[in-house]
Length: 393
Image (tube, rainbow, N blue to C red; front, side, top):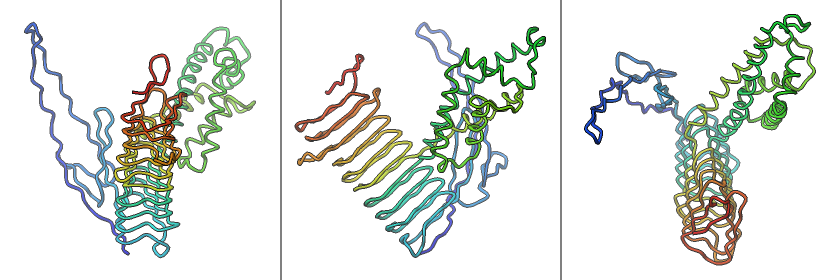
């Protein structure tokens, strides 16, 4: 059983943009071509740019991140394990991609900061990746998670986004008051605005303390799963500012700095949301699958398995027993069994459940509306209509 790093990077060439061709309207009026803008290519770890060529300076897999007109390129290391992962080899923790050519045996944990690929079976094992998890054979009584940390960061970012907007409004109000003549003649110091902040929040932003409290409680609950200390530090500062009777001086500069930190974390959560975290397996039995993105079951299907997806769930075989929650809907070939094994499938109110064959005992839920099939039903499409009624087609 050997572990090795691999190199599979091909140099890339940066091409200048080419001009589009002009067109014409239905009345034969000229439509000028859209102006083209060159992409900004930023090399990160393991990459350098020489003239118009992107060159790898270390071994690994190339990864691209697109945001607007900017492309960031970096190299991720890849670890290949050539045999089974078991008690002799130990657990695997790697800051890159992990490829396992053998099986992952009972009690073993494999963690990767990017993707995991397992060529053989999983048995009572735990897989955790920030990116994708792909398995080629059976998954038995195992836990697979892809991008769960990403899901948490996105959730925290959404909570902070609302808080950020509220603090921006608060800052604008404070600036107006500090510059007013009535403030200058008052006894309130511009270096200690906390009493004024509490008054403004109480009169104009009553919901802000509850938002802060909810964020702080979420941070405390997930403390073990949050790697970056910035999320906790911001939570502590928010509590001090809005939910305690602190005597620590607070100025406009203090609030501006805090809101800048919040904005940076919101931007970080947006980049996390764009990452490609998904699970792709052949089949699963008595297992648990959690992904921030899609979950694909390409083989015979799942038995008594719990599935949670921040994207879509697609099962080409049979879903027999267990529970499925899919944020972006489902596409399932067959759900339930001839013996009426309880099988539960749920999606949000704005999504659709598609099942080619729904067996007796299968329960579906769209939003708050639930339906249990008392007989085999084919070509099921379930969604809510405009009035909120569950429609089955």
